[in-house]
Length: 120
Image 1 (cartoon, rainbow, N blue to C red):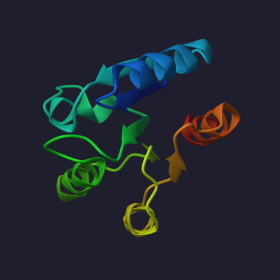
Image 2: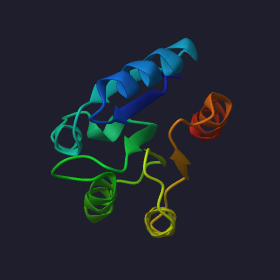
Image 3: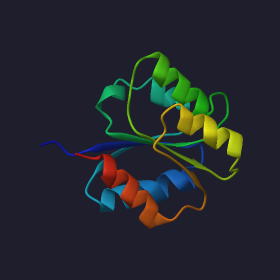
Image 4: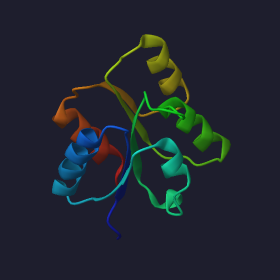
């Protein structure tokens, strides 16, 4: 069985780095993207087991990325993270199929549980 591949999309380098360390410590492979467009342009977009993404990003938001993935019929578990929790955005993300919508700073154990719930 191949190693699960997790993708992180966040314009904040410190968040990407922290999540990268956490997920690698669990034994999973990780790809990091500074923007939603970088993720969409990735030739490896179909190999990910899970996507962790920020809500607020320049140009394309996390919710925009979610819409793009749905339009392309790419279904993968999405874990949204945000420093600006908003009930309407949360409801929109979850209604479109997101696995979770976490506020920064999020509980590490919650993140680990979510990731482990979707990896084979």
